[in-house]
Length: 111
Image (cartoon, rainbow, N blue to C red; front, side):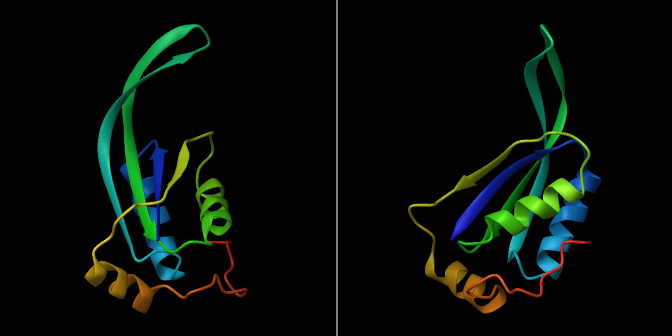
């Protein structure tokens, strides 16, 4: 199992990307929530709102997930892959039921 921690500009971006991933069976579940962030940009410290998208999926989907994210946003964002050391069995059973073991070749990223 893998988690992806993704930062986006808007809730609508998170909702859209999450829906695409679930429809294409690339994720079993997504969560999104607003946060505040601070960062340095061109010599200045910027503070602004952001949205975190957490994607819950199987191993082996990183490339497809990253392509879908990049296709649906117009800027550089942050994507981190996380490998949990423990996940409860009932969640894993659900994941195994809903997301195929290997990324299927017919997945199109046009969405």
